[in-house]
Image 1 (cartoon, rainbow, N blue to C red):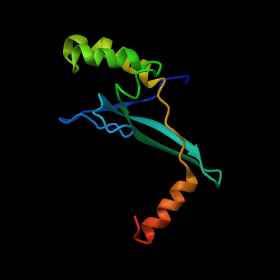
Image 2 (image 1 turned 180 degrees about the vertical axis):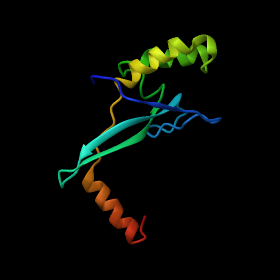
Image 3 (image 1 turned 45 degrees about the horizontal axis):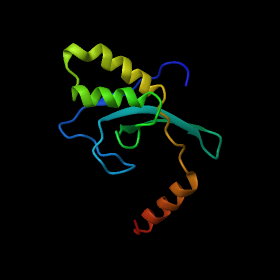
Image 4 (image 1 turned 60 degrees about the vertical axis):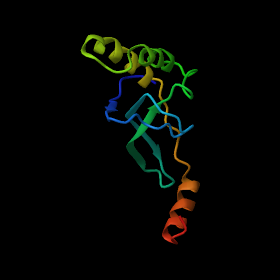
Length: 116
């Protein structure tokens, strides 16, 4: 991905849960994403992405940030520059899967009928 995009780190007392494997994640960030719908209209939004030691260990840019969390545990004033550098490297590689519009429509229909 080229250029910089705004990412927001979500802080919480509880660690995020990884939506892929259910294990405890290391970081929750909100990243921009978008797609073009069937009508040809651009749909832009933001979504949460969890950094997970189990799922992301082989993801470019994630391995160094995962190691950083294992060493430091949390962001402290002495390590903010290094954390920011690693966060940017990870965020530049993060990709959000495109929305499956057929699955979304099917789930919407189920919800409308009260079956979901």
